[in-house]
Image (cartoon, rainbow, N blue to C red):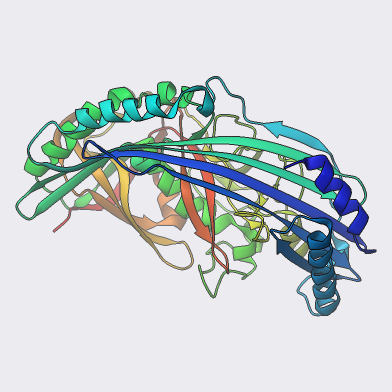
Length: 476
């Protein structure tokens, strides 16, 4: 799509109002998979459309369209203007109070090996080789290797001349092996799709994609003969691919300002965090440092500007355990009077931006993995999330992992299956005893929120972390 042509059409049809913007989104995706050594149908998708937003006399309206002709944009603009008129004096916020930054710019994912630089046949051959390595035992009953690539192009322009253009390249590699013996079924995955990143095919080298197949298969089979995780209060050492879920559910969601303000209570719940906590609340131990960081270029949710055109910068949400600011874009900041970040994001052109996580990271500490293991008298090391449950205020939780290994007298010992743990967000993070020195870049393609629902991409970088006296239990 010709960005300049779209911008010129928009400028011609933009209604007279206090503020008017257009957000164009184009996505092209391809999914390639080999399952049980059989090539699956390659799926390709394309999506293109625009949303026009109008603020006038204190009201806000928006309308989306896939008709990008001048007439199509004009019809969307008129619908948006009409909704702005209807919502004036009826909204929780006087939208005329918003003061968008009005800063133009561009952002592009750095690439080393673009997706299109390798023929489709070669990608399929790679997946064939990897998939064959997953079938190492007759007890492996299902196995799959896949790659999903998306190129995301967005244009944000305003009637007064702001222009933001962004192009993102996203790759999701996945491996899984499922083993069965009688009534017991165990699955090991490549971080549960957690190794998604921005970039090209260099991501496969960075994450060791091809080399991981044999380990994943061997561990799936090993779990069949392993005992269940014991039940006790003990230390828990969480791997980065489980820390990702812990950060996501018990820090990311409760710090979303729109949730704190009550916007999500009918659907995804509220938050145990209240506005008066910012600046003083002890969220975790002194070792807990959480940043919002869309500037880390290889991470899955990196960008230069959010979907309201606000420039995105790194900021501490929690520093030395104390809550500093929330995950709230311009509208939530204006409503609450609290500091936030540039995280107003939309799934696509046909959804409005709302407060969402982007790259939410737990900063590295000073402990090596060996130091953390050596510090544990009795505990369990857990990898890769497989189940999660958390209450509607994002406080009490229960999480399960694919893989566990006991730690006894400072040594990793026997493998255990179905390791689970539970706790309360408000106290769990205060039990953080040690933080690893090596970050691992991870993420998820599937964070859901909003009415109507929006599925969005999130990044999480984290080291392994050690927690003390956690309630641990096994499966049935």
